[in-house]
Length: 128
Image (tube, rainbow, N blue to C red; front, top):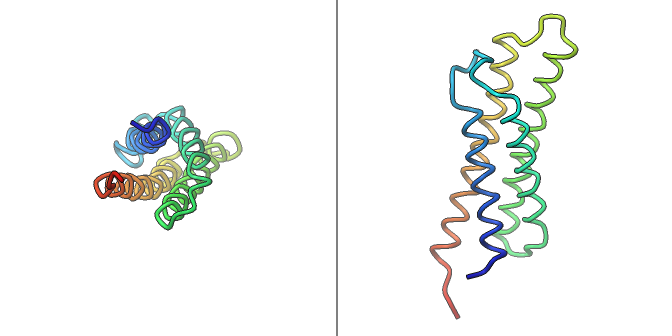
């Protein structure tokens, strides 16, 4: 068993599941979307991105691209949430919540692509 692959797979899957946990729920109801879960998803996604650096294969490049997309989407979601909560006079509204959850949904799609790549890579692996 390759410990490096286990750690890599763990963080890829954890990023996806944390993101899914934040994403699920009424898109406009901020009570159903925990900000700490969003930031945990972002932190784990950033760790997964760092783990993807150094892989010089074509599939490694696609893994890195999906991770960068997820990071960008989650960072944007965090910025929108902080803006709405701390700067905007309206506070967290259904509209701002919908924006945050939509951005999280884009990150979730990127995470799912990464998981599919991981599973495909694992299934097609040939021991030499």
